[in-house]
Length: 223
Image (cartoon, rainbow, N blue to C red; front, side, top):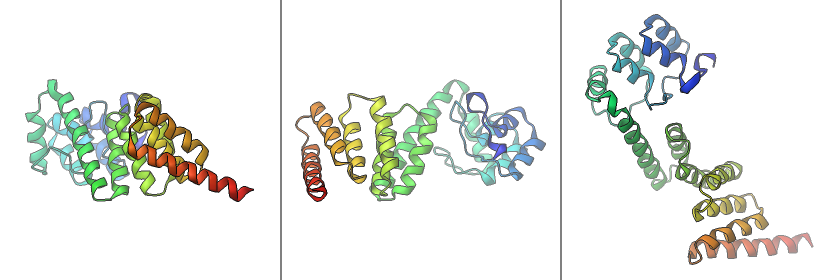
């Protein structure tokens, strides 16, 4: 775990070794099972950093342990080196944005295929690229909901709501998570807040009706 400690600007020892061409250190870190897949502040893995600096030996060390990178069609040592040479430093932000868009697409595809666990992993990785994107938290909340992870679904929904207080979907996600946790009273409040923002939303109206019915039944049982 110590091999993965992150310093300022999300730099790990592996990233520093890759950037500075410290091949021996890099090899030791890989042998110690340091995670090779975290992204730096520009959205680059240690492998991409090594390839950026044309350190073939370092690329050869990192390549077998690094997950395939979106956008690199030739997934080989030469392929990643050629790819990084083709991306000007001035356009690193474009690579970052393309990777974020690719992550969102992969997440949507996983949800479409009902592979919710895989989707949570994809969205979590995308959050490393943009921790302020409320849609990522909303989408991961949906996945946690389908996995019956109510507390996690609620935490993501609340984070989403804090980021975009005027977005009805954030309140709806919160209501759905609260329904899963059987907190029907708070769920009613969340759905009402969503309806204030989107009064004509049929899905939210139906969910509010369901929450009210569940609340009545819950109160009747207690009596």
